[in-house]
Image (tube, rainbow, N blue to C red; front, side, top):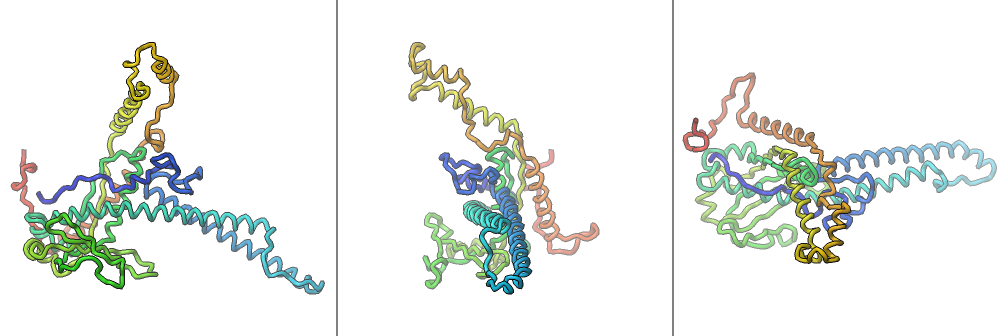
Length: 394
């Protein structure tokens, strides 16, 4: 095949959940107790964080203006106080209502922003690690014998990046919407990574003894991959975008004989991720929800772990269970975030439009065109449909 497929789950933070309540029914973080707290995945949380940041900026500006107005009014009365023999104060009185209000709001917004920023940082780390593992698996598969790396694509990857396409089959409803929001951010974060294949030099553990954070992580059960090392390239204090260098140590013989020549010698290949989110029909989501309700009804027909049929019709326990069910007892659908079962198709459209734009940009970078005329570029490896049974003409 011209490419390899890797089947995987959505790179999402399932453990932290996507709603106000955690998996154990407890609050996950402190700020979610607010009525307007953001629920969902990273995409929604980051939008909420941007809103809180704007709110903080507004309150801070109002606080500065209130303090300025206070000092301005005090300056007008300073001369009068000096003539009266009174010493003017140099502090802001605590009973100024406007200043107290904006100071309180500024502190509250700052605390909310810090709490949400930490939650997003942890969530991004959990999702990014999953997406990175998926991307590396795809990349290493593509340089194997007979893979695209051996058919002329290695030079293209080196110049324009390794194109990796994610196709999601989640519905934009409930928790699956949160999974889409997590996955979209995690996939986008792959653009920060450059992958370098290096031969194993036999040195394991710490690369630099002066920096304990720079460690090679061994891969004990792989016959070819010896270790991996992820390094942060951005300088401390720099406002530039964070970049990472992922070094993969390979077996010496495997590196010399199986790695394409353009990818040797410390060549760094960056990821070029593209996400398409197809979205499952809402009827399929309804079937899944119905199965969950059916299983709960069956569980309700059991009393103390024993089916009601085994207890007999005269059993008090069976009667109690039956009356509870006939009384329309609440059934937990297992998802507090379904939002009425209405699919958020806007995010599907936004992600797919973004995916098509990225794919067009990558295609134009590989084979640039001007006014409908193909520019002269190095030839791309030929693709012969006769080699693929699935693509034979009918």
